Amino acid sequence: MLIRGTGITGENIISYCQNKENDTSFGGSWCNQEQIYMQWKELSCRTDCRYFCMMQREGERQSLGLTPVKYHGKWPFLRISIFQEPLSAALSAINLLMHFTGWLSFFLLVKYKLPLRPQTKRTYYEYSSLWHIYAILSMNAWFWSSIFHTRDIDLTEKLDYSSAVALLGYSLILSLLRAFNVKDEAPRVMFAAPILAFVTTHILYLNFYELDYGWNMKVCVVMAAVQLLTWAIWAGVTQHPSRLKLWTIVFGGALAMLLELYDFPPYMGYADAHSLWHASTIPLTYLWWSFIKDDAEFRTSTLIKKAK
Image (tube, rainbow, N blue to C red):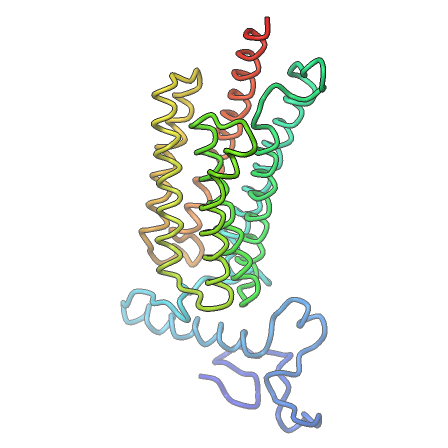
């Protein structure tokens, strides 16, 4: 129970809640006069009171043998320092690192290890620039995911959702361009334009009209499913030398996607379905960049043979 004016929630005393009697500022409130370093952390008297009330409530429910419930649309996670969802935040950061190391190894491969075109000194692999953009969008998405799971506020939530949608939309475009072997700029624009228009509209809808979680989940699942299906069919039709690796990624990605659809309370207050999805994408990311490098080597070898 919150004792108004004291910053006391049960046995927890929130030291930076101003006592109403001691607050002499004009229009001041006992729950909004935070110290500077607490403002920087985005902690506040209000959010801490909400957190401790939630934990106290969950303790009472557990003692009665009841299962956890969601508060403000989120499960009751145990906080560590400023990290509201510590496991998801840490796994997001690891995914970011995996994409960075994967992209770096790909960049070194196409730039310094594989042969370049004699006239232009550009790579033979026609999709190099597209994968560089993919790497930037991936690292951006996982960066904001780690920030959002650290501090869940309106701004970080919208940046996380928007970055994820942008990455999925671009990944769908990239899968179609590679599957249909689209190499020229004009056809690429024709492929990309409708999807870019839809993704942009969806992001604007989420940010400026309504952050509809159910609709956003449907959009993301459809885009993810279409690109997984595209990669799986293309690998079989073309008999790509790394098709087994790609099929493993597709199968693993489909299983991982089920974790996003099947929601359950956090085990021991930390590991929920979403955090396990973050964990499953770590080995898949390593395998994914391995396939991208294999594809670059395969296409380069094919084009050099044709040139001869």
